[in-house]
Image (cartoon, rainbow, N blue to C red; front, top):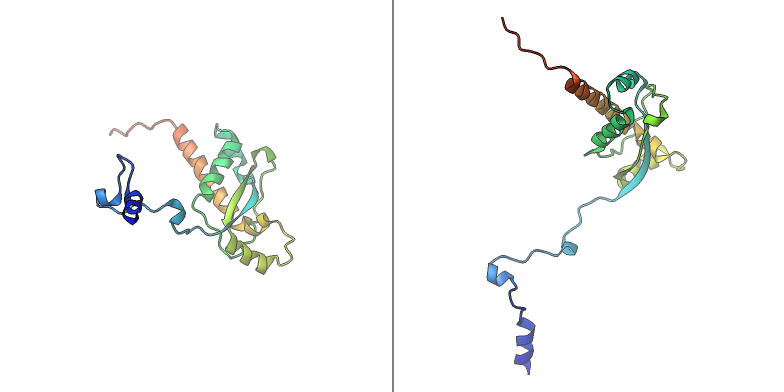
Length: 163
């Protein structure tokens, strides 16, 4: 009876490929792969352009809110929260609230915990207040870059200098 059980255990469905027939080891199951992601925490953020950027945003020919949102996406792509507090810049933000970009941002929970412990032990500030000094300058720089890219594309092509 034992021989019969062994045959059943090793039997395969027709047309299946196994590691013995291919010479390769089977791929690990997704649940068996080690997790390398660090824990994150979502923070609601709100970003406005700067007052000094208003005129260029109005003149660029693209809806200013779209430029601000695109800058936000670019600025946070690949960005990681540092456990170092950066005070919010004192630069004057625009009063045009319809240009404001709002979203949730996943940040490293460990870095956020350090910021909370060191700068808000009573947990009374918004989490955005703790990270905006790191994020806003990046977004404003991206707005400037986008405005330059838009202006370059809108500029008429220059003819070569023939002497």
